[in-house]
Length: 236
Image (tube, rainbow, N blue to C red; front, top):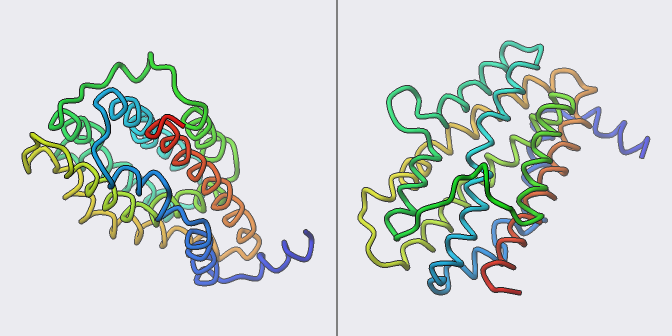
């Protein structure tokens, strides 16, 4: 462990980003079982609602959690990069918050969610949000940066897979799916901003280990989350 830590501490920002991309590829999260299930055939209405009640919990709470890390960092450069993502997620001052846009996706296929504050969530969804609060609000800011990089880097494949799945349902109009169209455009910006934050944090060699630890931590939480959604979708 000590040797591994010393190795991580010597990594450049480019090395760290390359390592995190490798972690994502090795995890298989971009081809997880839920994506395959969801793209295969429409789910029953009750199942569809239960699945995306869990997903909504994740996207509804994340901007607030991320804003807490923006407050905690000592770097003004990193604070600005994180704040840009928070502002983007909340509509950039000109549009709707992204979680509201996702509610429109669901409305387009006949789903109205319950109040997210009163729902009993599956263990994996509860663990994901609790884990995000732990990483972003209690851990080092470098761990949060690593976790945030993972979230943004796997974001585009996630959006693409969900979009293809929702296209199987009847009744939706193109304007209902603005959530997907917008994210296909802004995810590149989000990855660029968090990559800049990683590069800034990596200027201190000792930060490399924390960045990678945060990345591994959230990747584990997210992998379990999608496994949990697949269990709900397949009633396993």
